[in-house]
Length: 462
Image (cartoon, rainbow, N blue to C red; front, side, top):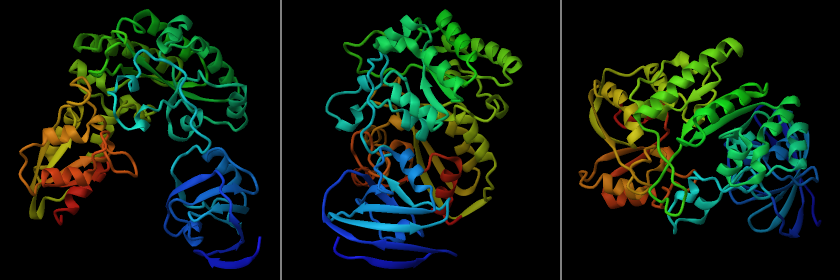
């Protein structure tokens, strides 16, 4: 430790002291920085993508949760490894709630907890061979459940994991239950440990942990009486706050996998009727509807999307419950111009399911003088026609679906089609490559009503 340098860096309205020293070329594990926020402490320190944060206060940390605990104090010792291998130390005096201002490449730094199941409906098992390795990774990590709302099965938790969940109050967690029948759950998940789910939920609920749960429904397997039992069990556990019902997703790559059926119009209507009866019961008993059928059921049943009041505070939004209604509600709140100048024309791309949500939006946009928006619903030729969600369209699907489009056209795609940071589709085709092949201008926009409208109007001068 050859040198010590004191730096005074003045932030917005406060003074933050940083002292650094260099310790040679020692490589260590740590949290890899992906991006730095403008005006943050991290920017003042000169942190860049690729730098690693090794320790805080002399302690290593396994994930973003532990990082946040260590960072929370007003006096922090930060140990960083730069991309050139140099180790630097910073003693930082900061406000209690002042953030470092970095985005990490991953939210866990010691490796994902992997899935130990062999679910009969696993979407990853329904993907073709030859895609990039990361797409075949099956995570089942309770830390990502807490941080990002990822659904976990809880079959790989040991006593230390359970103790940490309670000790650090990692709540709420998002749990894939599928069924509470022990034998049936073990069969569906291909894991003999899967049958203890009710016991685990009850135990953690007594410690104040809350849960949002989901049931991926496979007709003839975990519906009917099995679903009734699941509903009764989950609604009796104080910590369980909601239960989403999601139809099984089936691709054309199911050779060698169990035979499963998809929901059709009649079975979807029956499921919604069952859910409506249980929702009425729960409102009286629990003060909330508790049961939440995914939007796909209403589309498959040919029924209207419920109004906003149906979804209360949208507790299962990320599970596709109420997403269409919320999109419409947010769009209707926007103040749109009567005309745009200069005139502009766009092609808006979506999947088969997204067409239903976007059709009334496009009709409203086309009432703006000078604006012309064509809605292009593209079938999923990669995974098969039964996969209708927009986020699973590949670059190849767009190449096929947009064949013949006029060169120079402006094409709008929702960013849910792309991997964050890399900007590539599931088949590794990038936006730039798609633009070049089609000879058009492709722009990715946030999959929100406001983001879509702002992008369209910004590109028209409106």
